[in-house]
Length: 172
Image (cartoon, rainbow, N blue to C red; front, side):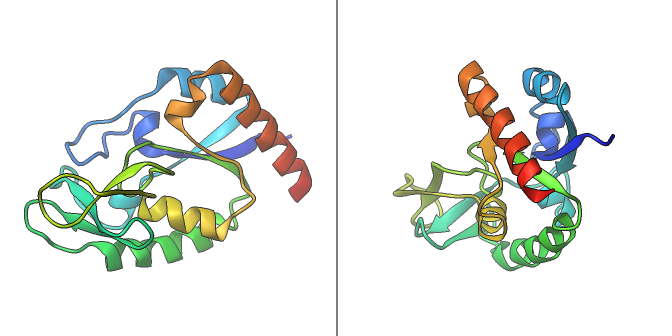
């Protein structure tokens, strides 16, 4: 019998795909969720064709419709990320995912509370959702999703596991 498949930000699996060429390996999540699920890595920036390492990016504009902008150059990467999201989410729809774990505070993967700046420099004036996370939740609104920081709390981790199993049964 095949295992339930759960998507996860690739950096949490230990893949060196972050802007600084490093990872955010999360042994607890990999160990805990790996007991129950097959973890499927996704890195929006790398898969969208952005290099590793790369200049850091931030969300700019409003919390509802932020743009993804390279901090140093001001280059707007929103179109490239949206095109990636459209193609990748269509592919993920065929991969039988029953949940997703996303990297917190990421301008692509953060589910909530991601800093949104009014323009280059300065202090954030709003909070939003990363562009990939926003597209993912719009495409799969019922799918259980969590940021890795939430899952470090045992009660939240157990609840997420239960939600994923229930969602998977619902799909069957």
